[in-house]
Amino acid sequence: MFKKALLRCVTLAAAVSIASCGQSSVPRSSSPASVLRPSSGTVTTYAIMKSSTVSSTVTFYGWPDNSPPGCQIAHPVIHQCAGGTGTYSNPITFATETSNGSKLPYGVRIYVPFMKRYFIREDDCAGCTGMWVDLWVGGNNSDNPNDVIACENYLTPGSPQKIIINPPSNEPVKAGAIWNESNGECNGTYNYARTARHNTRLGPPLGRR
Image 1 (cartoon, helix red, strand yellow):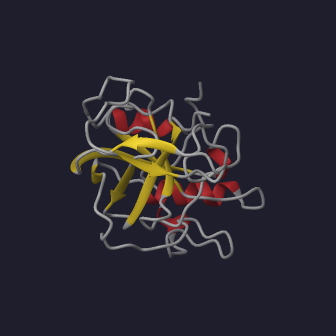
Image 2 (tube, rainbow, N blue to C red; image 1 turned 135 degrees about the vertical axis):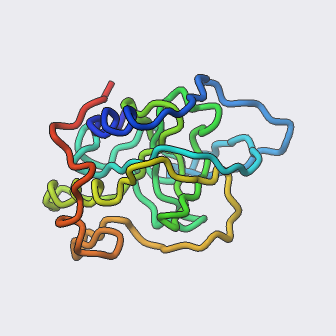
């Protein structure tokens, strides 16, 4: 399944020029493979890659602007449904464009410093271009979709951010879901609805394939 509310693609891509990986194959490595166990119980191996810090467009998606709405993901690795708490052992789902498969293959972890959370690639983003990560905030079918989307917009930075690919396991962590379904907090604040202005959506979600 491909995820993205594409209006942000138009807004951010016009202001940001970022090189695309342009490859869809996962690189081979002579290093040993790391092993992740999806909740299905099957074992999937992913090549170990060197840690690196890159500049990336960062956006957010959740239950209401997933396609279809819900927590379905294209390639479950450790979650059968998008989720996670942001720790190294339970990173949160993220999506990127399929051509980023060489640099951000399924199962790769990233660390996003401004969010203080770890994320894991388990999904695809049809509207993302170049080095672009779309981070799962959460939500469910009982949430007000406008509140969840306002949270996404509030968190979306107006310029590329540093992310760490294959990060060490000891980065500082603010554990927990980004959207708090129990109390409506967005990353620990209630101020998101009033301050989410610079990336407010102007139309329906786009970019699904």
